[in-house]
Image 1 (cartoon, rainbow, N blue to C red):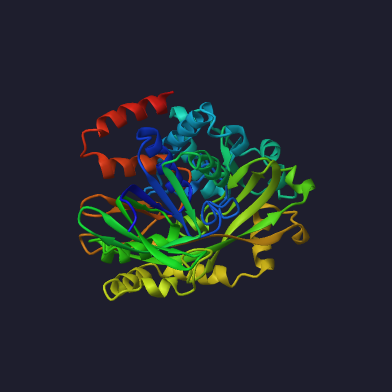
Image 2: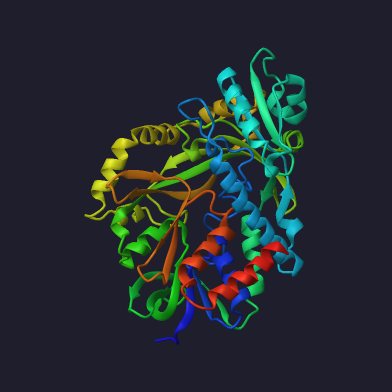
Length: 464
C-alpha cells in the first residue's frame, strides 16, 4: 500500500484543477494526487469542443431569468451567476499576475447578446433589461428593438429578416469567450513541476472505500493493467457524469437520494471565414422547452488557438453513456433498487423533457439547419457541419419531503464527516469552477483551526 496522501482528486477537469491550485497556494507542502483515466487532461466536459466556451455571467442566458406567473421576471439567479463568474475572473487574473496563466491567450472579450422574436418575448426582454441594468455589473447593458441598430449589433442574424417582424435584443460588450481546456492545461503544467503534486494519466479510479479515518482509493493502471490502492485523508470526485457511479461505490449515506439521466449534445460548426467574420458575439435565444438549459439555442463566436469559429446549438441526443469516452452500460450500472422509484417518478413528472430529448435525437441535419435559419435567415447548409459536443448527466434528486426534482446547475455532495466531496451536474460548472472549489474547501476544512488563516489569504488573492 502507498503512503497516506493529503488529498486525491478524481478527474482532471477545471474544477479538480482549480481545487488543486487553491490547495497548493494555501498548503504548498501537502501531497496531492490527481487521477485521470484518459491519456490527456481536460478531455471530457472541459474539452474546448465539448462546451460553448461562454463565460456564463448572467448577461445573455435567458434561462437564468425566468418569467414569473405574474409576468414579472426573476433575476436573482443571473445576479448570483454573475457574482460567481467574477470570482473566477479574479482568480484567473491572480494566476496571470504570477505567470501561471496566459490570460489573454485563454479569455477573449466578446459581446453577450440576448435576441428574441415576437411581442411577448420582447416585452419579457425589456422587463429583464430594466431590472438588471440597475445593478453595477449590468449597468452598461443596452436594449434595442430598432431593426437598423440590431443590424449593426448582429448583421448575420438580421440580414434577410422581414423588417415587419418584432425583434429585440440586449447587449453587454464585456462578455467573454473562455477556453476552459487551456486554463486547465496551463495550471496543471505549473503544478506538475512541484514535487508534491502527482498527475497520473491512464489511471482509472474503480472503487473508494471508507476506512473511518481515511479513504482507500482503488486505482487501475490502464497502461500496465494492474490495480493498486492509494490511501488519502481527503478525496474529491470531479469526473463529470461518472461522479454518480463513484458516489454509489463509496457508499455515501445519501447516495440513494440521487439518480442520473445522461444527455449527449451536438453543435453545428462553420469554418467559413466569410460567415465567421460577420458575427462577433455570443447570441442566446429563448429556451425551447420550459427553461430547460440545454434547450437554449445560441450562436457563438469561438476563439480556439487563435482561430475563429462559429457554433450553433446545442442539440440534445439521448445516450446511456455518462462520459463521452464512457461506456454504454454507464446508465444501467447506476440504476439501483433504491433509486428506481426516483427515476420513474421524475420521468413521469418531466415527460416534456423526455419528449424534447426524443424529438432532438431524431432531428436530421436539415431540421437542425431549419432551427438555425430561425436565427440566421440566409443560412447555406453547405457552410455547416455537425460536431459532437460534451456529455452531461441530468441529476435527479429526492429531498427530505420525498419530492422528486431535476437539478439544473451544480450540486455539491459530501460524506457525513465531510472528508469526501463531489460535484454533480453540468453548466455553469466551468464558469463558476473557482467558487465551487472555494465551497469545497469550506466544506472539507472549516472545522480546523488553520481554515481561518486560509480565508484571510484567499481574501487577499481575490482582492489583488
